[in-house]
Length: 121
Image (cartoon, rainbow, N blue to C red; front, side, top):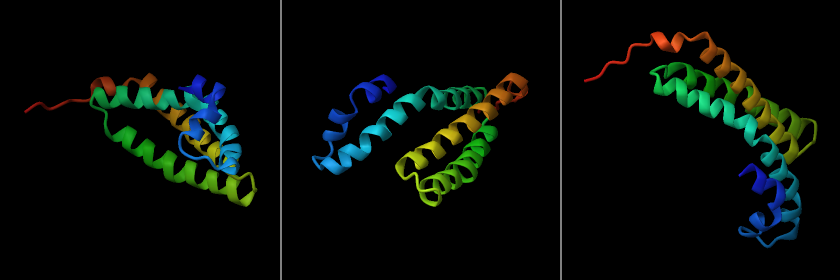
């Protein structure tokens, strides 16, 4: 999808609105999302791997930390305080993905998930 967001943002946005101002604001945002898709994929995949292995608490904590302590403050800081608008908000989301990716990669590589006991009824 990232490639589609990069090469065809205007037709995608036009599916939802005909307002030119919204389309023009959305094109660079969609391109940023397209570039960020691979970054977002790492924490998604590794969190799913950890949950599948029974290590469910870590992905929960990581989601909370990244969402509320990285994404929201950075999005507000860059988007509102610094004045970057939509770009700043998406940059906060990318920061969340980078931190989440590093956290899940660290957890995965440590291998503690191998020792988690899964109880079956």
